[in-house]
Structures are given as structure tokens and as C-alpha cells.
Image (cartoon, rainbow, N blue to C red; front, side):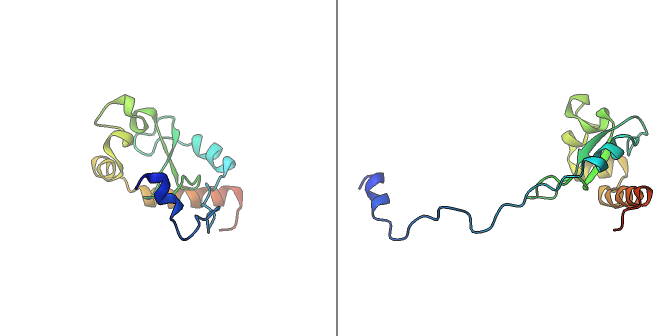
Length: 117
């Protein structure tokens, strides 16, 4: 039996739309602008923003840390960037805790801007 014939024998129709909507990215451009003014988490150089994701989650702007291009981008070398090493090896190599840093930066931002948590 060919594929088109198998599809014609389907007893239940395919759903037209998703049952649950996809989770979207939570954006906070003011937080990203503030974080980009901070220094690198590792070496205290001028930094860019790195999104730290959990497996299967979209990027969240409040789950970010400041990293200089050397510690952020893979082009800087295979042994020093988070993109090359991955989260676990990066934390072990530089002695940082990314989750604790995320919480710390969020608390500092909320205190400086007067936002309630």
C-alpha cells in the first residue's frame, strides 16, 4: 500500500492547532541594558550578555550573566569560552556558579531599580 493510501485510511483527523500554546520568551530589555553595563563575571572586563538556558526552555532575559567576548564566544578559543566548554565545564574551570550569579544579578537589579520581587 502506498503512503497516500495509508493516509486516506486514518480514522482520527489530525488536530489543526496545538492543544496548548508554546511558551514564549520572557523579555526584559531594560534588564539586558543594565546587565550589559556590568563587568565580566570571570575577569571583570567589559562584557556582553549571555543567556543561560535550562534544557528545553526558551531564552529568558532574566536568566543571563555578563561575560566578556573571550569567556562568551567560541571564536576566542576552545578552552576559555562557555560556548566551547558548556555550562558544567565552564563552572568547574573558572570556579563560578552560574545559577547563584543569575540570582545575585537579579537581586541587585531589583534593588537598584526599586522593583518588587
